[in-house]
Image (cartoon, rainbow, N blue to C red; front, side, top):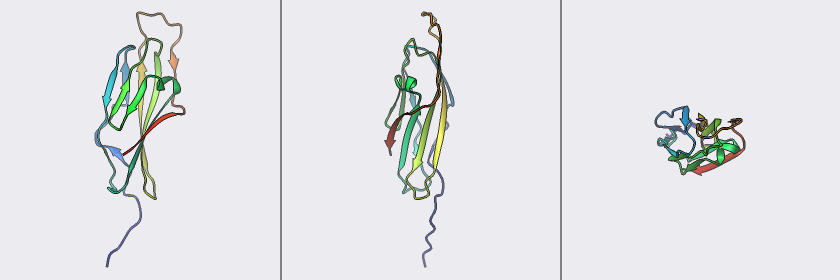
Length: 129
């Protein structure tokens, strides 16, 4: 006799921690290598979405499920929130959200009257794995 239990063992997660705080300088490209993704329900497919403020979307991009590229310009100084959301396709769907607080430092070679301060908005990149 086989017993089938419906449910969801757990949400998908990165296999290693992600630094929640990141500081970068303008005009310096930074590539963040993201850890592997695992879902305890091995048959589930995982959708990976990045959400960020439209201002940050000009210089923060997601390449597949492994690379987060950050390349701010001199006028992008400010604080930004980036959300990385992993969601499974289980009938009893679960997800994990990782938040990264990104600080783009002021460019000391340029005088800026104000810095951008932004939080997550409607811009997103989606990748299925």
